[in-house]
Image (cartoon, helix red, strand yellow):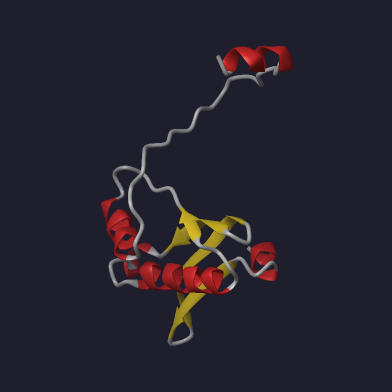
Length: 116
């Protein structure tokens, strides 16, 4: 968290001096950002805090030249999806994580077969 604050890629929303929500950019380029680390304490959810802090971070990114933002959220996290849609995000696909039991070896010659 300290590193992301120093790099100016994290935002914390406060209400009456109390942190109520946070967001960060997992990845950022001049033209695009990846939103991540959005979190609000369970007892403070459904009050628009996450939507507000994400919106502010995106405005900052736009001022710095970003025109694209992407984020990932679980399929069953409907409140988050609703908040992100209210900010202009739209679903473009499904993504999944794959955890390997052991590292895969990469053979450059096999990459050619991938593209066929």
